[in-house]
Image (tube, rainbow, N blue to C red; front, side, top):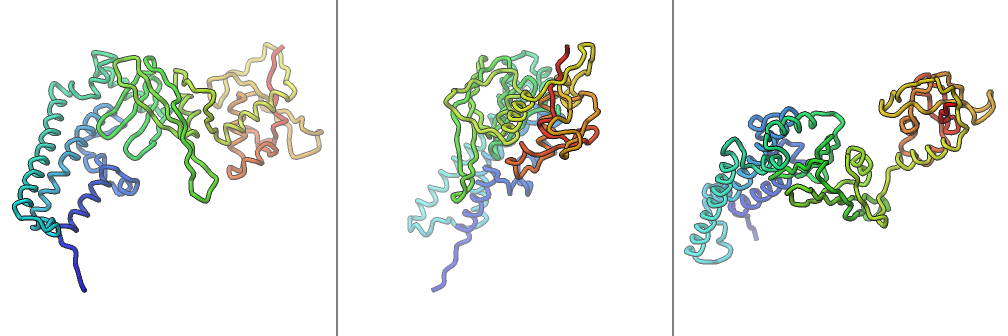
Length: 367
């Protein structure tokens, strides 16, 4: 017995599968360039140069394009030339009436979306949700948008993409959550952050390795609706470092830390136990050349063994690094696949390449 799939069913399956993937935007579609951002890049402009205007255009284009999908299916079926419902064994009248209702609904969705975007566009986009959002902080929203654009171009902003359809950006003053149809801007001076819960997922059924996500509740003090953001626990420290406000967390919640964070804590504990390096109070070493924010505070001196024993060497460099940056440098010189060996391993001075271990790092004390 031979059978074949009708063109209408094949078209329907292919059309809705592609439409679903286009809306959900999996990694494969993004890599192939099948996204709103790629297909309409000439219309949208540059996100890096004009962040706010780019997302005003992107969200508007997304609303219209997604609303046109049902109507596009109806138009495609007219070319296929079959109803696609013959296998249901219902009357021609019912099929015709059903397609009429579908057509009117599809046209209504498309016209409604188009009307909504036109309303947003009136008076220079002043009705767009993004502009309404920024207007909560300043009536001169265009000037505020220019400030947001400048902060977005900064290389030290925090960015995260918890899903293919959304992203989180934290600049010096703003927390920005981007979605398919809207972008929410919250100024850090007018927000309260708290950890809602943590979620753990196994990487695979046969693996003990887990991935932890942290859900953070964002409660703006302006006339915003509260919303949530979701980040990986390994990004939590970097996320907090970019904030000007405190993230309130229940002490009962355990947030996993990376191997580097755990090592840095152990590194600090060990260095604080090492002998101090005494210098004259007139000595001035300036800020750390790693971060340029904290004063240089450590000196490398061989003290783990006698002069001619072991692999460690004396370092003749002046103090140039703070404790945190020296710890990060030490961690970066280790085998990243074997963090259990870091505590007993070695690194080289960032300047003269002299070998040292954790016992050779001393805190500077001025007398």
